[in-house]
Length: 342
Image (cartoon, rainbow, N blue to C red; front, side, top):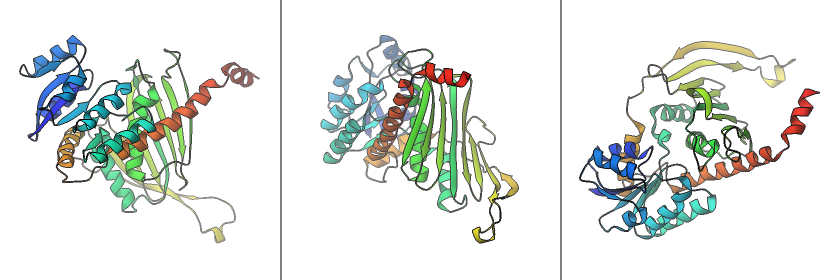
């Protein structure tokens, strides 16, 4: 039995508690949160829980084997580093840290201590994502032309991070897992409508050496929640609508066929419109799979696709996108608007 302590019991904490409490490999021993309301919520869920107002005290406890970190992003590094230095396994919420330097140090600490460090990139364990990866690996999609993601909703506005760091880790982790390729160039633009220094809308475009292009539409300003991803290949195209409970994944036997270059007089492709297939996906909560995987990784039973190195790659993409976003925000908007009015 792996004894777990949860640092942070806000928005995601109760969901993490339920996932760990329902897994027979784990025993949730303690919860730490500085807010009394959050501790009271944990107490209502299980009166025997040990409740603390300080995460350091939880991490230092001798009867804790592993720590789950669900605190604000700017605290992830300090808490995870403390836990690893005290010989605890760590599962951190996304993103792993606020910089590549911090993330890499956590990886080094985990490897030096022979400890498990994973990031809760939950979509990597979603059946739809694994199906798309299988389709690509088996060559059923053909050459991948694009990845297009619409990830928008109304809120939740975060006090410490912008929409890029809140929503893009999902897409970056999915892209890293499926395509196993790093972009050669990243562009980003956005706007701050509510908080002057925290963009609430962002558009990210990533260019790959394989000639694939990825585009992310991220927003806290949408009246509706949308979670839709399209992946276009030369043989087949895939659309994953995570809010469509009946047909989450649709595979289109459609594409564009070109004549051999030697036979071309003009660049006129032929269009292929075929059948649409919606495979049955298991109705299994991905977070439950992440928790089960955490236990197996601690016991050295399997390698992790969401380990610290994968988490560091996601942070690297976030850093590159943030740099591009910063350049966009620094550009004088008035001159751009004036140019458009001409």
